[in-house]
Length: 401
Image (cartoon, rainbow, N blue to C red):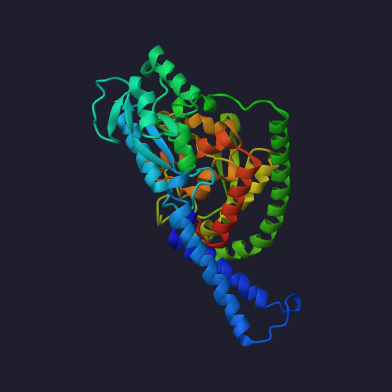
């Protein structure tokens, strides 16, 4: 997605070329002698200019049509419209999902029956019985099923889809395409994704990942304890001056298997912040957050004592954010598959935490659940590493909430 954006190219490729050439000039003992000043100016101008020209040409020519997947949606208008919106937004994201592939062009929609009228969304091209003919006519690369509900698909529909598979066309579910584009699963359609209901295969690769993840957790937690020990005196002094009260804050959360445990954090709010209100979401500019607490949250240092929970095996470095039992019960009633989050250990950071702010409402929680479901389904060392790198960027940029 970034390679197709001229503004992103100028910012990233241009600065990379400029910095590289300047570093080259700054290390004379590794370069040939610079005989003339014009050689130095020529190096900077030629390398930066040539790379920018090439990348702009690439973005406007090579990365466009020839590599775009033409897709045909089978199913309801509402789901198809949502997919089209995701396609349009995916290429505009500055933080593009690395699993997104080459992009999509939705050519239209096919209804399950002749009575499926064009009630919004992509233009209806026909009914499912003409699917093969329409796919060939429009040069379709992929068939996207908006719903995999058993009640929507009769035997004849399945035969048509088998014809598409036999002809080499790719047939995918809406949920799988949506997650490739956005890096999250649509919580409202995720119930059709049976992979979320099944445990990972007990294979040597999965066992190796589980052992490696636990080893990384222990090493990371020990390093975190060292950082915590260095930071505590300064945080304690700042609290004494700005907001006297306990240094640590303990709260019951739900972990793997829905088992409760006590999470440990550095206090970022006034003492007894929820005495009058009970368990509520923390809002933007919440007056209960202290001045020191605001900085702790931005730097994510308030989460650091949770390395003790990681050493105990109650948490992991990477995983869904642990939620309070009262709020978890509320969210489980309103959001399908919310309990799938409890299939893995909660984390200090995670795919949802680095892509979405703290949930301030049910709708925020719905979006965040989509990222959590994506992580549960695709958990791997690669995805864990991406989360850690994103977290480093957030901490350095003081972009926490």
